[in-house]
Image (cartoon, rainbow, N blue to C red):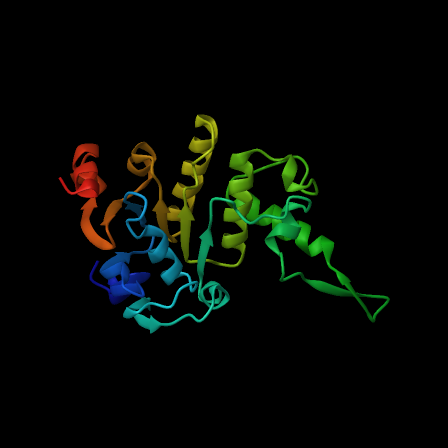
Length: 251
């Protein structure tokens, strides 16, 4: 690990704070995410996890501190700017258009056009279908009907579509908010295997979950928040459930 490329984190959060009036939702918080690393965020409700991911993804402007991407300081006025720089957030509700196909969901708001009769701009459905097939293939995800509306898919398959969209637009950092909540055990395993694939592709994943079993199954490190501050940063191989719970509750 002597080259600077290997040691430069994909994402670094330095002394980040976010205050809402007198409420300090996040205070002097620091963490790093390296290429091919899954970092879990754990903490009780109100610990500051949501504020942190919203500050990283351009929803909130931090009150203080800085965010660095590959060593360069960045500021995002909007979530769109964060996405342009390669940070995708996959929220629990997935933000998929149920009535549209995988391809249409991948390109939502960024649809490719072609010219019909040489002048009439129309949706390039073929390009969307090809992109959908290639992207989902990279995630080892195969459904018989790529043109089916995503409302036909199971929870794990829908999660894969949301991840596929992020991968297609070359997200380097994926923030996943409770991706295994509300899924059955086989579907949870599918999502965990998708995260392992993102890791193998050298992407960084921030994994937010209340499920410690999932955190230990998929993460390299766990960062614990308590009342807006960092309560601990541990390698998964060097900690256990009991220690993590103690860090969360402050015991």
